[in-house]
Amino acid sequence: MIAIDPEFSEIVGEECMRHVGFEEDMRSEGLVFDPYFDRLLLTDGNCPTQRQLDSIISFPTPWSDETFSVFRSPSSHANGQLIVGSYLLTAETTGRRIAYAPLHDPTNVQTLVDSYRGFPLNSPNDLVAHPDGSIWFTDPEYGCAQFPQANCPALPNFVYRFDPRTGEMHVVADDFDRPNGLAFSPDYTKMYIVDSGAIHCSPVTIDPKRPHHIRVFDVVNNRTLIGGDVLVVVESPDNKWGIPDGIKVDTMGRLYVGAGDGVQVFAPDGRLLGKFYTGTQVSNLSFGGWNNNYLFIGNMDHVWMIPLNDTRGAYYPSMDQPFHPTPTPTPAPAASHPTATSASPSTRRRDQPTLYI
Image (cartoon, rainbow, N blue to C red; front, side):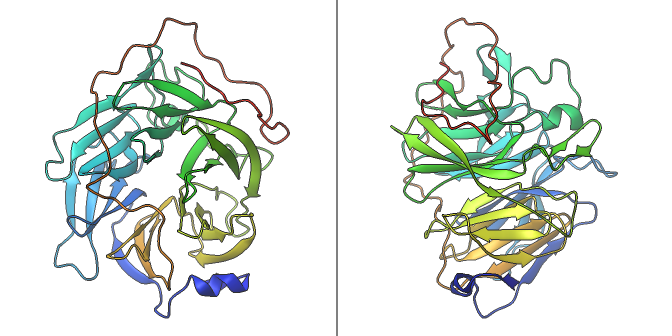
């Protein structure tokens, strides 16, 4: 752990980082803590490896009597995950959809949404829930290069809001290179979205001139986003291939970002407070535990757990959360193929919300 600002000491507890699990050649992603069954769920296989893994894994927590097990396989190379009510929602790379299944019946998988304006999604990456029941998610084209398919990408690299109750779906951000992790502020008035465009696939290239930053938006009427200023440029000096990826927020509004050298922690104003140092890429992370005061870290083929001080994650699953899926979304009006804006997000501030219906 590396403290850069005195505020970092408010976060870190007295106990050290604990090792939760290891699986050779794993590429841990989509970490989410399941409080109902006292387990950590993560995805394994959203990137090609020698073992060609494709599963959702259940890891035992240190206080649990469970053993390592496969929660669901295959998983359509699932990436980000989210628990809403009693359902597990997954962003499927090769399924090209947001899917859902009951936590007690993981193989009963249904499609929540898989297209926009009649075009298939690219490869959904990460997702979050709003208290009004809507699901917001990123859809970069990474999976199109990692696992080539016909007509992929079919859409620009958009960020979407989807309402499961009505099937309504619209674009909330259209000017990203590669939108990745996203998170709401604790009061849901702001949204933070990672752009990891510094890394492209097929072939894999990295260009520090491309985006490797976090942008902040204002949430308007719980439906649209305005703004989009760059809040933080994420650097990983020890790992030139490192990029910002997953992002979570605590109850104080601090940002926890998976990066090339571990988890970097930022104040809401963008100040770097400290790092949970791993030396290699952290793709995803999750708060969890009985009081939501543990930080779980997916560090390639390792999973770590950090007890925190008086710090808690801002989001915690509850059976009271609304989730009323409509398996077949309401068709959108006929329209031409959507196109992304050409304006640069680093120089442009959007003062009017993007809204493609």
